Amino acid sequence: MTSSLRDAASRTLSFEPSTVGRSTESTLPDLFQRRVESPSIRRLLLAAVDSFWKSGFHASSTRDIAKRAKLSPAAVYVHFKSKEELLFTIIVVVAERLHERLAATSQEAGDPTERLKRIVQDYVAFPLKMFKAASVANTEFNFLNAAQRKDIVKIRDALELIVADCLKEGCATGEFRIKDIDMMKTAIVALCRSVLRWYSPRGRRSPEQIGEYYAELVVSMVKPAK
Amino acid sequence: MTSSLRDAASRTLSFEPSTVGRSTESTLPDLFQRRVESPSIRRLLLAAVDSFWKSGFHASSTRDIAKRAKLSPAAVYVHFKSKEELLFTIIVVVAERLHERLAATSQEAGDPTERLKRIVQDYVAFPLKMFKAASVANTEFNFLNAAQRKDIVKIRDALELIVADCLKEGCATGEFRIKDIDMMKTAIVALCRSVLRWYSPRGRRSPEQIGEYYAELVVSMVKPAK
Image (cartoon, rainbow over all chains, first blue to last red; front, side, top):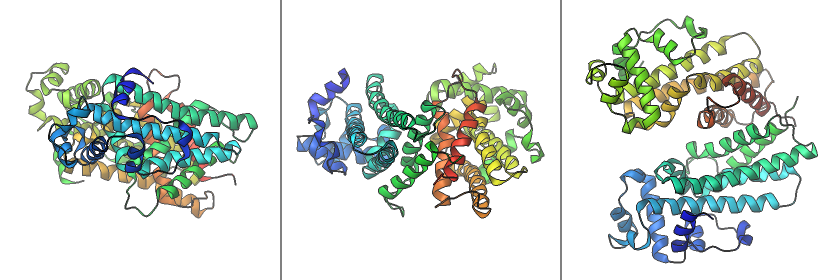
């Protein structure tokens, strides 16, 4: 864990052993429940997600966030150094949860094809289940400071590595035919992440259904017909 | 053409018949040369692309843009109502050029597989050849006003329709096997657009090589092995 991460984490997050990777909590309140001990901080984080989602980071005020959380106007600064740190904590929690999940998924039994399917499915569906927070993480990322961005990029790199490792294994067993693992990994990750840009919770497909569709697309990309 | 488009267009752009769709101009100066009569406006547009690319729309000043274009500080307002309209004109020119190109490509001879390949190749490579402007169009899009955004979305919808039509033709001939044309179109377009987020002009692959790689990926998506 890097310095800014440790810094924010020591104040707000409780880190548990990653044996819980496949645990079934899948909504944001569940996730905060597990990771954040203080009920006030949990309320602040959920209020911040709502506010950033609705008005964007820039137009959200800490006063407003505190009000949504039913706390005093200065409450944010009791627990967070800045609005920026609030955003960072949200993004860290969501990114780490996805990483924890994909790491667990990639360790499950099954051949590389099976595992790649499940990895893509989780990569797509998991953020959709905490759609507002994942969207905020995507669209407001640039408001983080350089050290914070670096920390998040590290987690994202680790996600990409899980995909790349699975691709390599599939090439080794002869299941996949891939000309350029790095290009393929980049394309797969872009595809998984793109869903956040058009998904609507009111749409006709569930996160799981979209995840399954994309998993099949990706399998056909690594196992071309000709 | 919609009102805000006509409005901006009447001031700055010259519209030519689309028989030039396959014309070979591929850099931004070439494109502006063809579309914009006034050399001062061309200089302003190129200066704005550089400035938006370097500093972002928000931090770019019209004074700075005029200076880069070697014009008087007020020059922007002689030709454009606002900084916003300058951005809009850049995005329109780039989006329309891509549309013109894809429309021409989709009319070429060849079976749906061949045409889909060429469409994807152009969709990927063409923006990369005018990378700065295309990036600005992507990242600064949200600074446009609602009417302007609507105009651009119309052009983007037309691009997506070209992809969807080709997918339908391929399904009709039996070349493609696609469960859900709309989902597939969305995935393909997301894949094509994602390249702008990681491409570097100093990278080891040319826009054409990346376009070819992605064209093959897409063909394997619509022609799954099993």
